[in-house]
Image (cartoon, rainbow, N blue to C red; front, side, top):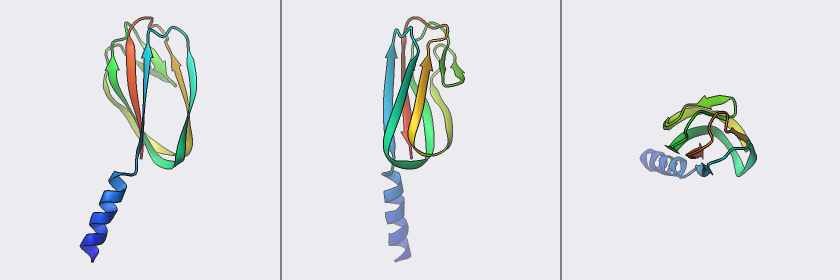
Amino acid sequence: MKILFLVLLAFLSCNNKHEVIIEFNNQKKPIFKNIHLEKKFPRQALEILENSLDDSCKIGLMVVAPKKTGKIYDVEFYDSLLRYTYFPFKASKGTLKIKHTFY
């Protein structure tokens, strides 16, 4: 019985996440966006999927270097709303595609 409970718990925890993918193309002005979620999640991760920007940009207070990809952060986040800001900073051309995962 304990094994069945652990397997069921592992299955439910794996399917308990929400992903949001945002893409910016040749964006020259700041963008302010609210991401509303169906429920509160305890953690949030940010991953850059694609980055062909010609220079640095800012996501919140973080400066993202051109061509940088991969996981940026994984932090505690107990909320159902993410206030999101993108500043082109020095970038004027290229694409930035990011994925927010809430779990």
